[in-house]
Length: 146
Image 1 (tube, rainbow, N blue to C red):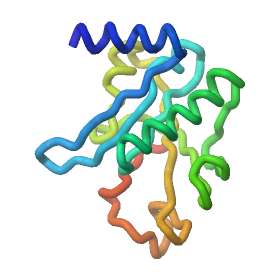
Image 2 (cartoon, rainbow, N blue to C red):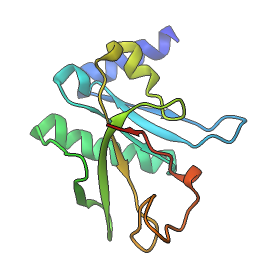
Image 3 (cartoon, one colour):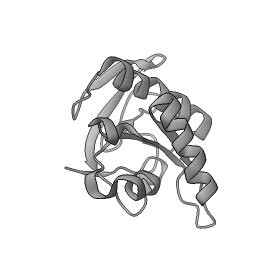
């Protein structure tokens, strides 16, 4: 764990944030990824669940660059049309859950961590909670809305 935190600190010092990948475990939990480091600059950490972790990392790095380098701020319910080719993503504000717990960020910054989740659509452009959403709720769990 010490080596992980040391390497993460080096990345944060060099880039401004790091992305932590959480692989599913034996109980078939959903993979997710989140940033660590944006809290130190007064921004919420970003989180995405249910996608291939390589893709999730790329999407988070894209958005974190906008936040860190350009001071772009996202609001609850905001649609982001230039993140996923051909689809909008939606940002939601909330707090961590047991399933989507940004542990490395919380360990580093304690309870100061705010979270924004990037929600991705199904092939028809629908989101979790929309009538006709193509995937089961476990495919893209959500943080607790604030």
